[in-house]
Image (cartoon, rainbow, N blue to C red; front, side):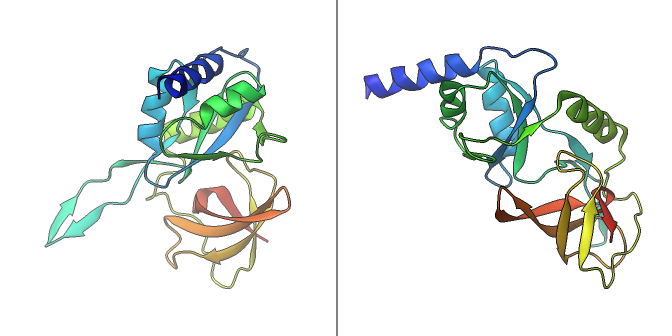
Length: 191
């Protein structure tokens, strides 16, 4: 038991070694709804992490309006920057609710630092908020992802709202495997 704790502490300290400001970011797959708790754990361990936030929908319950709350833009994913080595990647997997490093430890999915900074700025300005109207996606089978860390890729449109507000489910192929993702309509453009 003590040996296991020491091993985890050693891996986490290796992960806490900061990478340069121009170093790429990793995409961590986490349990849905646990993005903020994983972020807090990583911050406590002195690991650089970003969870871009957007304002969610306004809700109505029993004739009362519940104000919108901040939500992660990428449901089930967070961005982490550390040194690219096996010990650091293994250290990331020791945190609660972390499922995997997107792409695996052999070929992790890396995102350019400039792309992440621009994406985070847009999220901070409210460009991905739920109430921002987007084009309608009725009858659309394929979409192009134009924003976020997966920008430039094509995806299969699974389902989405009829009104043109909110989020959609798309199926994206990464490293030869299909992954279903929930993305804001602001990310997507019909093909």
